[in-house]
Length: 61
Image 1 (cartoon, rainbow, N blue to C red):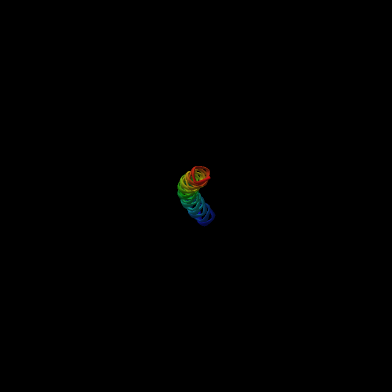
Image 2: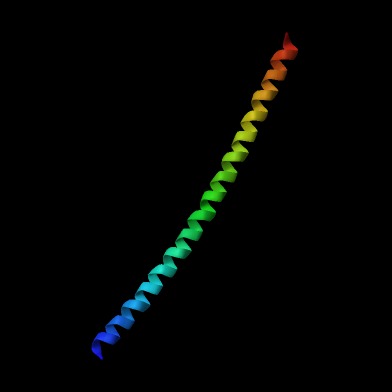
């Protein structure tokens, strides 16, 4: 009887830990997506600046 109670507690603990890891993984994935979107925005802004500078320099000649 005592062993089955211990086994049951370990099973519940295992489920709890697994659930928390799943939620953590989900949050990490969302964070990675946010970072990727931010990086894309930065790249677009830098590309726009470079193209604008090239146009300004070309028109100055």
